[in-house]
Image (cartoon, rainbow, N blue to C red; front, side):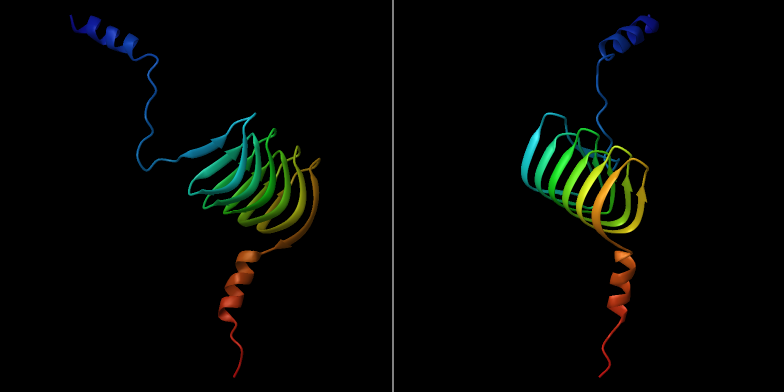
Length: 142
């Protein structure tokens, strides 16, 4: 009697999608074939497999997938670049440039990983977090 009910409930819910839990990790995504122009502001990770022209401000990680392209500016905590980026890139912590990446522009980051095969044509400034902390403590003498 109880066994049949559970099997029927399981069959009904087989295709159900669980709702994400509150407070759990979330991901914003622009899929391949999509285009976005303008300004994006995100508090959680942002994955780009489509095309973006504009500015991206992200409090978390920006991921440009192998088919993703960004032309403009990105300011984020961490970044993984597998696709194409042209513009100004500011990464507060770790920038990971994968072997399929093409980056052209100005980069500032705390730490940098560039894998063999990546195209990395940039003016790069490192340790921006350390410099900001030093600048805050350095005061001109009177």
